[in-house]
Structures are given as C-alpha cells and as structure tokens.
Length: 242
Image (cartoon, rainbow, N blue to C red):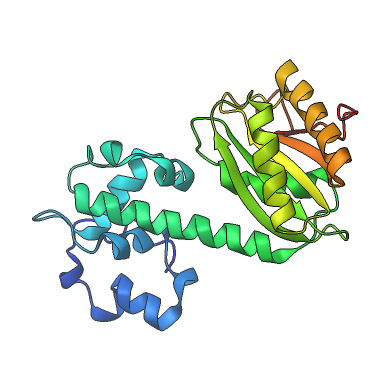
C-alpha cells in the first residue's frame, strides 16, 4: 500500500474505508507501510474545503519535486504560498522536521567514536543541511576518540579566530576533552578551504598545543556535484594543519 499515492486523488479522507485511512494504516501496519504523501497527510491533518488531505500532501510534495530535504528547509513564507498551507500548518511542518533533525543529531552523538575524516563529515553533514550562512562547530573527543560533546561556536564572522579560540578551548576544558575536531560549512557548496580557513586552523593548532588539547582536524562541508565527488574537505587529510 506504500505506493498508493495517486489512487486516493479526489477522495476526502472521510470517504475512504476506515482501514485505508492514513492514521488507521500507521497504527495497524507501522510507518514503513505508508508513502511520503500519506505521512505528510497525517501531519497536515486537514485540507482546504473540498480537497483531500492526501491531495494537499501530494501537491505540497510535488511543489518540491518530491525532495523531502528541500521541503524540510523551506521557509514558512515559501510553505505558505501553497494553497491550504497557512501559518499553522507551516509551523507544524517546521516543528516536525526540526524534531527529526534533532533526533538524527542525537543518534550521531550517542553513536560512536570518530576514527577518520569521513566519519567526522558523516557526523556534521546533518548539522549543516540547508544552512544559508557559515557556522563553526566543535566536536569534543576523549583520548580514545569517543565523542563527548558537540557545540556551535559561532554563525558568520568565521575569520575572528582569537575570539573563536577562547570559546573553543573554554568549551573543551569544561568538558575535559583531550582532542577536538573543528567543522564549518561553505554554503556555496565548494568545500575548498580559504587562506583564512587554513591560517586560522594553524593558529588554533598552536593554541591547542600550548593548552594540551589536540586539534586533530578541521572539516569543511560543502556539496557534491557531477565534477566534485566529495562534499567535504579535511585539512588534516590534505596536510594543512601544521
């Protein structure tokens, strides 16, 4: 039944047999039995007068060409341009996707140690998804590379390395971290480090050496293209930390 996205068009939920309604199906068969449209219909709850909630969900998802990521990062202003999606439904959608994102972050945080740059990029990818400005984060590790804590250091103004050093190492000391991984995003999509990225990282490595906390990597997250097969750049992996 998960592929029944088009079969319900033209029917109001109340006109469907009870065992075919999305809410009943999710209770009887679980989330995996429902299509994305049916799951969205449950979140939306109601459609505009004369329109099925399933039709509204289909129109909403179609507006973003079926891309749930694009839907999740759409602003309330954009969502509200779709007939039947007002301020209340926009807020409910944003809350739903925010909870899903936070859950993914929590799972990542509880999950593991970071053994290589690819695992570091995997950890941070969700944090930066859809972000329109640069953010600098720090990931704190113990001596065995197990994650202790993650923290946002700043949004924008990433060239102010002296301020960042105080914030970064204060956080690391508070949590008794032995090592840290820095990460930030390039909203342009190109993860290639700037001169400032490289020079700031080297200063932080030196500061960490004095304090006794190793800066083991600085990962920049971008996006893949047909020409660029990797969506991240590791300064450590590319010999730019010394």
